[in-house]
Image 1 (cartoon, rainbow, N blue to C red):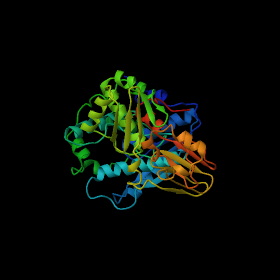
Image 2: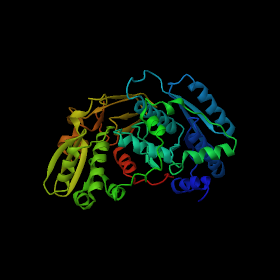
Image 3: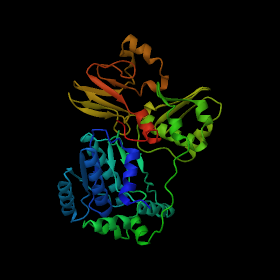
Image 4: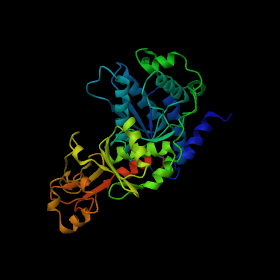
Length: 409
């Protein structure tokens, strides 16, 4: 068997662009897995002359957490990496604490990764984490199955950020043996042995060999590459009919999520019925998960359901000059002057004649869900002076469907 560091390097060679000048971010908790990850990543970054950023999240759930953060900072200083200490502040939930901590951790890490100009964040999940997750799901948990390469699950904080887990086929015992051979130490979090938590119970049960990693949905990336950003996300209906059923189902759910700008993908019987109908011949209009789906004989479109905007506090965005923000989970807005963004609903008649003519290309029911500035310009149909709108739906869909396979240059 090839050496541990060789297998680690193989993953990075497959996923990263060594010639990129951007920094590489690595998440360090101080545990054995993340210490091994950080040491190997530091060696790789040094060889390829890539800046290294080391990010540590203090969940503030253990009295010793501040000491753990200081230990992580000391390792970062020894390795010459830029150290960023992040903290999960505020009240903590009484129930569902592990899931809430995981979500907070992803938000903090994604925001920090973007903030330093990095697009890749390395995480220290191992084969044992996969095995424990499989055992947890068998017991009824909804914990996700980690993938080697995936977009950040935090939205919109994680836009443009990809997660790389290069240790996913390595065992904890291998990593600790390697660390001990180098004279390295690590932190043991007592929560890992606390039977109140499902992962600790799975770990204490002594999970054996992990099963294979979750298989990619066959043909999903190829199907996603056919989606267009044209008056909403659109796809030739024949492509959806020809696709494997699991790819058609996955893409339909992801497209609803991305078109609506929301964070919880639709699942269950409603999604199954929608996919079955879309793979048929009949024209239809449906709503699901905040998205409006319209299909004629040739094309399927996923649009924002205009009536849902504002129900989750997404209806208005005020930016000062020089600020950047996210409107409705679907547009990144960069302001070079003060601007307020609201839904177009009720203001379309105030658009310029040229903009109204361009707006006519959009399905009528979707027009009110487009963004508009207070001086009534609509970036979906015209340029907006002093403001840059970047649509997020299509790049988000491409990332979620696996159509981006390695670090962009």
